[in-house]
Image (cartoon, rainbow, N blue to C red):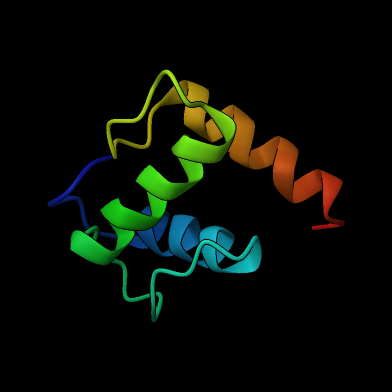
Length: 72
């Protein structure tokens, strides 16, 4: 997923980012600038060589691991 994506999967991503303190505002299901920024900030911390603001397979796996480590 990337900027411009819409739908329930974007909402799940937004809720997950908010849960691990990479705040992107209200989970509205629209992958806009706030969501892209939150993904970039997450990537800077956990995937520093893959910072592109796109929610791809590596970012998804890392976010799942971080959620699990925090009890979600």
